[in-house]
Image 1 (cartoon, rainbow, N blue to C red):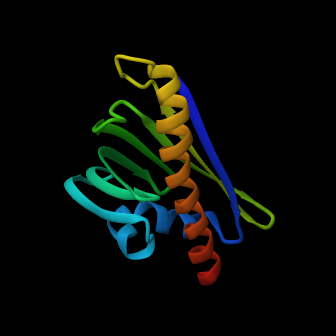
Image 2: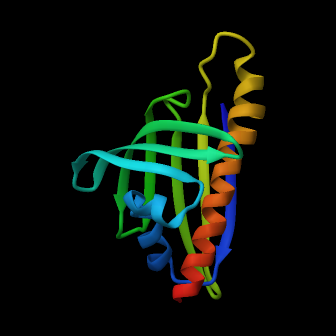
Amino acid sequence: MTITRNVIEIGAPARAVYALASATEKWPEILPHYRYVRVLEDRGAMRVVAMGAWQDVFPIRWVAEQTNDPDTPHIAFRHVRGWTRGMDVEWVFEEFARGTRVTLEHRLKFQFPVASEWIGKHIVSGYFVHGVAAKTLARMKVLAEGRA
């Protein structure tokens, strides 16, 4: 299993950062590297979303179940379609004196017939997952701090 963590400190309250992060349907409007997010099913706290983003010049896409918990706050995704099917993603928000530490963790057991551990670690997680997550968190920081 490959675990990819991106961590950032944001000078804004956890609830404000969570509000931006949990509204995935708005990501294409606020995150330039996102091509689309479509809500396929809405079951209240859980919904199914089809997402597409850019990592450099490469278009990527997937479908995930998204579970929002505004009380904690916490966001969880389970990829159900695409190359990353089975990947679990967790957004953890920890308040501290200067704002919120956001940890974005992706857990992937890549299912590919040849060299799956190397491909999963270096290409899928190291390049695509880490790259998109870093851009997402950097932009969330700019937006949340601008509103704080």
